[in-house]
Image (spheres, rainbow, N blue to C red):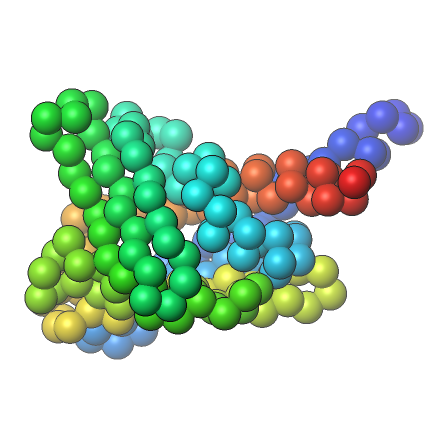
Length: 174
């Protein structure tokens, strides 16, 4: 047995599921082999968030990310190859409860914007993450599903897995 491989961080084989739950809701779940405090850190630290949020297979770079992560604070993500024609996603944090819950609006879609809730539940050193999106109408939910917005979620959360392995290793060694 190779002892050096035993000490190397390992990625998990956890699956991401995406399910429409009602005419207005979509729920994405994933379990991470990391404590909730580290998963929460990855969601709420802009420098970390930038490292995992965009699927590597998408050729759209994140040009900027600004966030004031507290209830009443706001965020703004800007994507695109050309700064003259950026795509911006923005909204307001409605609730930020350390290590367990983040709720924000998605205002770029106007009246069709969803409210996103991420909950983190830790059991035995693993964290169940539930990302819940509530749209204002069935048409808005269906348009989001048809846009492919959820097709990269598995890859996105695999990238979060990679980051969590690094953060967990760093936390254990410090």
